[in-house]
Image 1 (cartoon, one colour):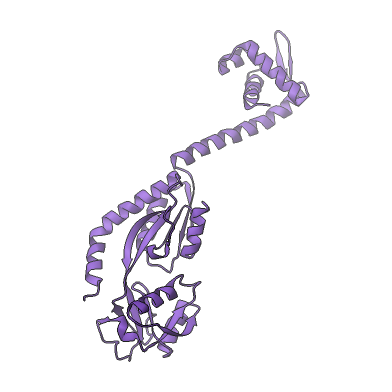
Image 2 (image 1 turned 180 degrees about the horizontal axis):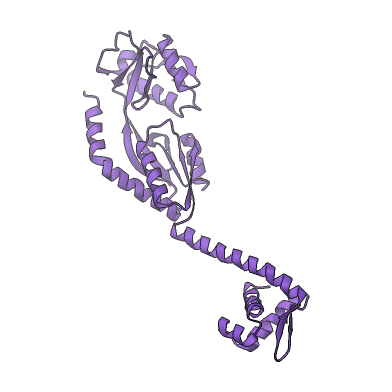
Length: 310
């Protein structure tokens, strides 16, 4: 049974005239008659009563017509939806992000994308960067955001740099180094350290260890916090110190001080698979690039002003 046969049958059922139905369909009347006969043979029931003058629907034909109308409508809807998805005006875009990272630009892009594509569904999925990479490679997600330094050897993925993230050391307010404008990591060699669980901050412990080793020492960890609030609480309680991205700050009222360090900044970037040709993905990336270009002069100036001096 073919869709063409159903469309032929519906035209005859609506017009109750083979000649007029053939004209509407732009086919020969003989070809139309053969297709209707083939359809009745396939169904196994007579759908039309016809003679040289009159055409009418049998009871089976009436029931069949009611169902085929709904079926063909669904087919038309499916075709329209597929075309809209192909044009990028409809469909689903899955964006992963670790929202513990600072990315105001990402939020702005999401808002603009939704404004431009009200019929598209944008799904935001909170995930650590390593999980994002797995989802992108398996095509279960379209786009992710995270530190470029954690990308590893995933050279087949495309990246778009967004901003540099600098790091501050978090100290108790009465710490001897709290009043400095810049703390070198080598000045912290004798300190004890508090880190955040891998679930809450993928790669954070590894980053601290790497930066400390570059400064000539191995950090001595005494506590691992399960949340950012607990992280700061341990530092305030005197268990140790830690370093945090420049957008992360203690809650007001905590007896803590954040001071810029000489740690190497990391690059926050967008990541996607080059083989993913989703029109919605391309639209999102276009908006993201526009936002970066718009914000770039101020972002570059901020980065220069925030960078630690030698």
